[in-house]
Image (cartoon, rainbow, N blue to C red; front, top):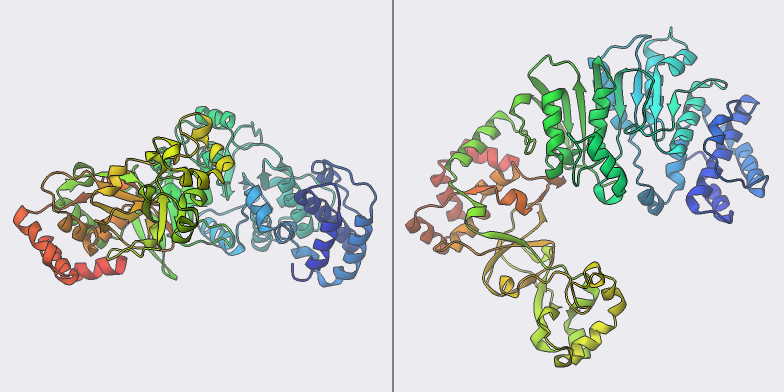
Length: 602
């Protein structure tokens, strides 16, 4: 888009009155597309349905149209119309705020190239091949597939390819416009019928036959951003993959399989969360039992999208069950490594895919570990204030407003924790749940009253569960005042800390307490922070960023630790870290080769 005068175009958009920014952008893109086509082909686009199915407002003959016409007249000689992507212009003109509100994420071209390379290695095409993108967005996949077919099958005409081989679906009407316009520019065709449909792939009847290849980037839409009625509809129609807090993208796998020919393949890029997420268990079971996994390319926490913090996975599936293993490609630091993995070894509880040597070491540790964490302690989330701005105060605020000291508790967040120390920032929590009478602490009440409107708007206050000045979820005070092991809910490494100083913790910290009798906390802490346990843990928990892992109770509770005889555990309190690691490796009979496996994995 650097050959288009983006700055001037944005100025024109900002001068349009009476419509929100997104609709102004759409209107201007429509004008640009029509004008560019006219200037290159000396005629307007004949298929006016491309426009009428998108435009829902009428700005009439305006200054805007004249300004765009003038701008394109000047710019057209710098633009290769045959490689113009309207969707790229759309991306360029939208602000980050608008992109977030729309929830649209377009697939980078290098990802598309990688997917097409993998797909066409597996599946040959001819004039009878039918290819569908079920969420075509800006049309990138279909345009690149068109270019590939033209290059590899020059005997097929442009018109034949687009009218007989390429199909697109999207629920968003402007995405349909972008896809059609993209095909118009890249094919050079004008008057033709498109197989691009403005329907809901998951709900509507398609009536366009089965497909050889279904490829694309299904939308990632979590339960919070989905209307209840629609969730209910999906839960009934896709009960074997979609439930509770599952993502809409899961439904695309089942629907995709239903629309495949008997020898067809699916190639989707999606969030890697489905490999490990709690509410993707049904999807994992469905894929394992009903599809042949051909290739799984795991970005392993790295993001491949410019603005969306999503770590993707490319998964290629076949309807034919013809082999027992698949190619697993994993990004490791800045390189990709690949190896074969047996599909039958995948577990519904989570797809943890390890090399043979890593898997053997994991199984060795698991066989020696003798106690589940859930059997020796409770794991609880930290406090949810509902309004940190009101309840978390500095020493200066305390002094200025004379907030009663009996309400104050030392406050930390996950960034304050390391395995060796707490980096305390001198912040305090007003622990208002212990207020019996507002008259007992007038200064604190006076201070909190400055945020009363915000506090009253909290869900629990509206429902009458909490008084306006109370914490949203204050937990039990004793959970924090007694010794506990605390840890961040997301971290690059194990950071378990034995807190004897009664810190109160935010919701991004979890704590272990209610330990079984006679359990040595010094030993447990040493074990939790050891290389052995960190390797064992990271083989099982969800990876959510580059080298960032989730430490949620649903996973941790079901991990095992090794509890040695009492006389061995007692020795740990006086040992240095290096000595602890040596002793644990002796307990697990870990040799130097296995030490290197652990350290390379970490």
